[in-house]
Amino acid sequence: MSEKMTIRLGCWLVLFIGLVVAAMPARAQDSLERWSPPLNLGKGWWQSVTTDSQGNLHVGWYNGIGVEGTAFDFLTYAQRRLDGTWSEPNEVIFTTTGGYTVRNALAVTSNGRIFSVHRNEIAHFLSSSVVAAADNASTWSEPTRISSSGYYVDMLADRNDNLHIVFSGTVDTLAPPPGGGNPEASICAYCQDLFYRRSTDQGASWSDPYPLSIEVATGSDRMNIIQGDSGRLYIFWDEGYDWYIGKGQAQDVRFVYSLDQGETWSEPIIIDGGGFSDRRPIQIAMTETRDGSLMVIWRYSNDTDRGIYYQISSDLGQTWTARQPIPGIVARYTNDTPLDDFDLITDRLGNIHAFVVAQPNLLSTANAGLYHITYQQGEWLAPQRVFYSPIMRPEWPKVALGPSNDIHLTWFIRGIRENLSGQQDATGILEVFYSHLDGNLQPEPTREFLPTNTPLPTATIFLNLDPTLTPFPTLEGIDPNLALVTMDTYGSTAVLGGLFTSAIFCLAVAVGLRFWRRL
Image (tube, rainbow, N blue to C red; front, side):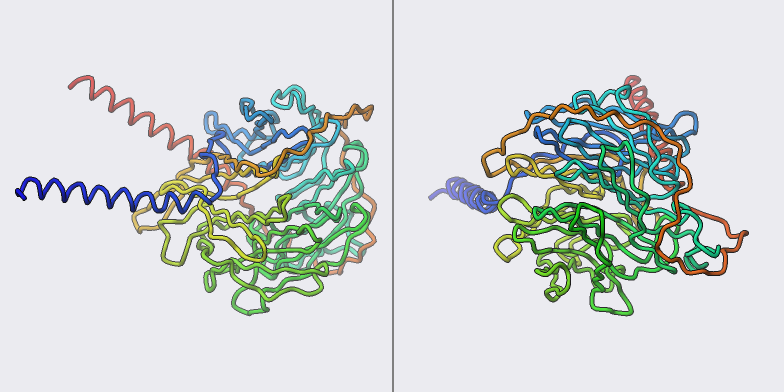
């Protein structure tokens, strides 16, 4: 055999082996769920998502627009119709100026009305529109004040069209406590606690704020509200460190439940992660299984242990399985995503889906990204990476279930770069993304929106409410010279920083094109 023929056969052999090796992982992935390519919805962050009875998906997020050094804050909205087409994203609600983070949540009732609770400066407000025209700013009602101050917020429209809002706020949400003083001691002065309100008439009137958690030396963070197939309502949150105020220390994760559509609530059920003194659980997500059991996932508050743990309870949180790490995945460094959240959802087949920003192991920082892990028949399947970018850090995964057992996934990204010391810095680039997992069941019948004669909510003046029956401790007042410093400038800096980065990029492109034309 000639030397030329030997080389040719060798090349064909190498090519054949390469094709076989390349095909092997492709065949292995055939059984994996196929997520649609990430779709960029637009600039912004802190998105919320919900579906309606017609199968439409609704996404809202915070977008700041900078003009001559001033940040204008908006709630931006987009709708994905059942046929897969999208409305154009539009800034539907102007809140304020100054870079005040527009935390938000959406809910839709059976009469085809969409509600948005959102942060306007330091308070929470509610506004609504008809679904068919929700991308038009002029269709949204005048905002109604829900709280006097606060940061986090979440909302749910239950199966009976009652609206439920849970939010972090300060005690001035209520009337001054008996005996004066302030329930928050100086160790956590101005820390925010957890409050709940509900409406049984589609936002026309609201119950008084009900304090679900008021701790003397802690704040309440990252609260969420869900409804299970059983009809029970659950509110879960982190107790301890208040990121917005920058005080307190991580203490535990906890939840409460209601058996009567929010009229009464259980005492908080605490999950302490083993009671370790050097690390405490944070970042809780919860779902109810098809048999009425509960699953929670959480991580620890520092990097001593970066496992993402899960526990299951079959008796409404009275007892739990031993904490176990989800295999094949570890959390990012706490400083990488200090405001991140996990999300859990149970599909129509009873499978549980977890969505986390994570990495395969402690050394695989190059593979860090947004992961989907399915819990099926008592076991976790291999983690599946949905999104990864070396210069974009995903955060805040939020999901909703569609009529075909399909899953709608949203998140936002921060642009990142390495500084001179080799650490990662945010660039100011903030964008919202979407991906879709096709369903595996026949679609549930969509339901036409029901007609209603309920009048639209109108703006109301927020007055001091009657004192709550919950006793408050009488403590020494806070030092009047103590300055209240919050993290709202964080959002303003990000918005304006992103505009500055974009301006520099455009200038560089313009200069490059001009230089190229001269060549």
